[in-house]
Amino acid sequence: MKTKQIFFNAATICMVSLAVLMTQAMFDGSANAGPQVGERQGENLKQRVADLEDRQDEDKNEFFLVDQSLDDLVSRVNRNDGRLVVHSADIRALQARVKKAEERISVQRADHRSLVSKVAEMRVRPCDP
Amino acid sequence: MSIFVTAFLAQSLGRRDDAKLLSDVGSELRLVACSVTSARTSSLRNVELVSNIINGLPPDVHVLLLVSDRAAFTKSAENRRVTFVEMPPQSDISIWPQDPFVVVQGDAVTKLVTPCSFNREDDEQMPRQLASLLKLEVVQSELHFEGGNIVCGEDAVFIGFDAIHRNARLLELSADEVTKRFTKLFRRRVVVVGESRQSIRHIDLIVTPLSHQRIAVADSRAGAELAAEAVRQEPALVQKFERQCEKDFFGVDGVVELLDRDGNTIKRPTVVGQTAAAVASSLRLAPDLEAIARQLSGAGYKVVRIPALIPDQEQHVDKQADVLPQYPFLSYGNVLTELRQNQPTVYLPQYGFGKLDNAAQSVWQKMGFQVKPLAGFSTSAMYGGAMRCCTKVLLRN
Image 1: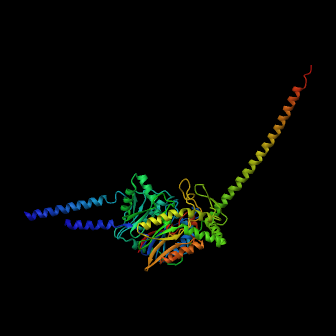
Image 2 (image 1 turned 90 degrees about the vertical axis):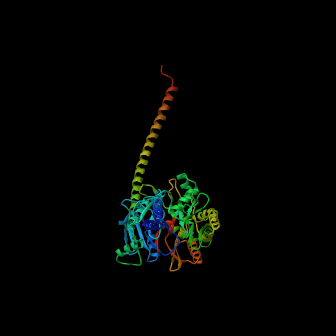
């Protein structure tokens, strides 16, 4: 009976410990993080790097990377220059229109001045009987 | 039976728990990630710089090269050291893989931990692409951080004051509680660097953990003195450096202005004649760096000072908090270090400013490091980043 009791107590302690550990496992890190992608168990990162290297054939010491799109950079600049030329032409046309308008305004101002002086003269001149 | 199950679970749980933030101090580098941008998609192209980094690292370091415009590039030959990692179509990435995630590693597991949110181009996709290739787990943290504002020594992780303050504000927590959460996330003791708002955005430009309780802190006073001396003694060389920075900025001489994808104008910054202004701003920042050196010394570290020339940091950021190019930030602490065949080795950025480049090499040599200088960092430095910012270490031997 006593042996049975000891065995029962030991089993209870083990179950409680197990429950505590499982609870820890459930809540550990969950305040900070939630996994998104699973890691393949048993595979080592070092091994995966070695695998990546094995996929490539040659092993040159020097590595040179060339950015072919530098030509695109030049074309971006040329496009900007093109836009600048178009905008400059627009600005020149606008300036010519402004100049013409200013000329018309000065003509109209001169007409206005002449009309004003004529009206003044008519006011001064005595009326014909 | 229950005892066996319990023991097994305890062992497996214990193994899962041992993953710590990967240290910046340690054994040989084995795997790093860089990113490369093309001229047609980015104003900051770094193709020559990336070639320099790859050729400057030892041949057994494998490089994962994140690329958003693979068609733009041709390489010299198949090379076992380099694997291209293509980003999703139309994505737009920066040249800074350091910032959007950190690496935690244990005996049996490696995880990439991302911040709660990360808003710089499409850089938040970098960890996902790397994890997909390497079959790693990506874990999103509730905390806000940038990798550049976190550096890790042998015994502790150093986090910039702004990261703690920002999390405290956004998560409505005390600074102590934020620090505890970082401690739990990284499984390392946390040292908060600085006691007020950071004058330099990322601490990896100014704080470099070393072995044996040593730590290097940038010395902008020494950098200013060296630069001022160079202006007096060799003005032609200083002007040559300034002109070269401008010339290299867009990669095509004569290009002074470009439109970005959104139609915003990017202008080539004026560098010629600006060394004197950089000297003045370095002197202004010197007391802040001295305070950090005192703080870390008080925390039990042996502090070593490394010269740095630091341009004005207030004009460096626009209203949208985007980094604007300006006079290069000459940091000699933004490095990668490793212990290679029992020889401490540093991969040291070089900017073409002879006086400062040489002085920094000399300081590292005096500390017992074998110095591997890497040229061509002046353009990246105009956006405020150097070797560590451009290179994310994923694995050490």
